[in-house]
Amino acid sequence: MLLNTDEAAHYLHVKPRFIKRLVAEKRVTVRKVGRFNRFTREDLDAVVRTIDSDDAPRPTTVALPTEDPIVRAVLSAAGSRRSATTTGRGTTTP
Image (cartoon, helix red, strand yellow):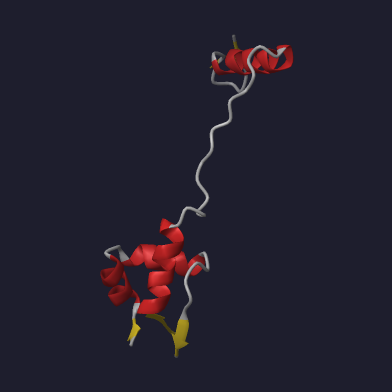
């Protein structure tokens, strides 16, 4: 059975906008019926398995060695730029 976007969203308990985003990102198989997108439950289940899998990319945090003098210099330079204020004319003052 083929589902339209609203039915697919209801099946996955998400908003139709999320289904449209999956289509735009080519993360779900779409069947075109005329000008309409249609989805099978098997394809939607595959998307859920992909999202839930441990293989899905996750944000990573990298610890920098702060005892390294180069890293310390870059971090201190970045800190001084953040503390600068804008005067409103495109220039900054420390």
